[in-house]
Amino acid sequence: MMIYPAITDLMEKFDSRYSLVIATAKRAREIYQTGVTFTECKSNKPVTIAVNEIAENKVSFKKVVEKNAPMTQDEELNKIIEGQYNDILGE
Image 1: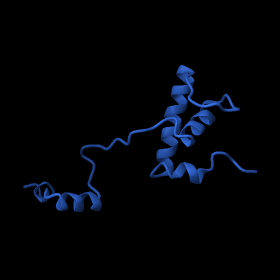
Image 2: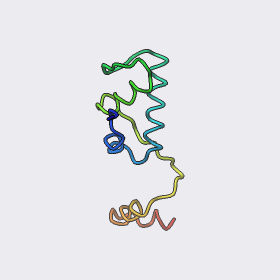
Image 3: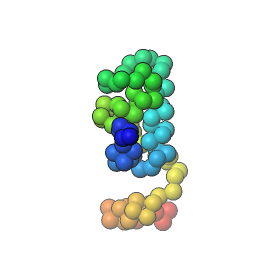
């Protein structure tokens, strides 16, 4: 039995399963509260509808990054390349 949408297809849109679950839960909550959907679905369950909307690119999500979050190595290298080395050293 195939499940649609496949988890591998959904994971292409997110960094982690955790992000996928959070996005799906937030959208499902919106659907439950407002009743507004952007896709046709056989199910009337908010989570199923939310997953289908994500798979069909009917909704989008912004990734929120904390200001005080530590930089990744790639971010540090990008700052160096951009000539912002002083920010990394705190000078």
